[in-house]
Image (tube, rainbow, N blue to C red; front, side):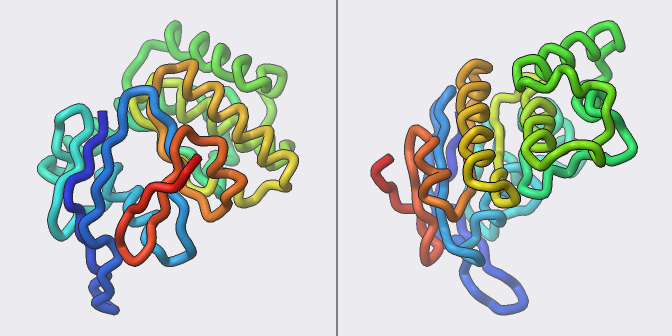
Length: 222
């Protein structure tokens, strides 16, 4: 489903090679974790996978489509349709209700209102927050905000979910609940997922664990 081939990327200002021949194969329905210290290049790798950044060399293929070969408009369309994002900082829009935040990806795909709201409510139910549908983000806890982010990432049935340190702002107990929910809902939806983390405890929620170090990916035992 996702193929990363000999990926290289250098930080221009420092001249540092942050990705040096990264290789990875991700199968449909697989949930993996990529660990690494701060500055190891984890977010850079995620941005290249999503088509938000371009490699210096190598290829990223999503369902056979080479991301770096697409122009900006085509990359945006593919990203909206095929990729779901979950971030450490949640990125929930504060002026929208919970339901409106989860509906937003469906609006970008031009689904009708009769299709959008029932699907969004279904995902809020799956994530255990249907009762919060008309609340605003300022009224919610960090764990509730991250549940919204999971629902929003999965509501449009993406092929690939990218989670960038999704539990970094949560306490240990809430983080464990969120990771269990993420694993459960990703597997239930049939999506593949990449979890970026510096936490071994978080990484153990995945099917496989990789470490990004010195620009290379090395497998660890899950």
